[in-house]
Length: 132
Image (tube, rainbow, N blue to C red; front, side, top):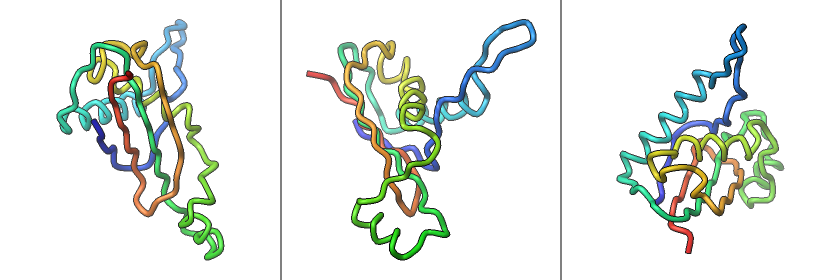
């Protein structure tokens, strides 16, 4: 199952703490995880019972101030976005967003592949499949 999340890739936000020491997930992260789950459901994604493989391609918007030289490198796939959010945080947000939607628990995910790219239109393409 392949589905697309429109917009700039977002990473899992660090937990915040109340004065009493209670930890909670930031609202922006909860909203993004809800978007991920919604897009997966809308794409008619199935619930997997066994081991799962997840491939993530995060496409970041090309900065407006990019030179022609750098744009050429981007078009040939030779220049990747070394920008925030880190790919591991993007992966964590995606896996948490798919929890209870694509699989019962993210401990079922036994293989993850993530890569960052530049694109005219930012988005994240996610493929979820059984791991065999």
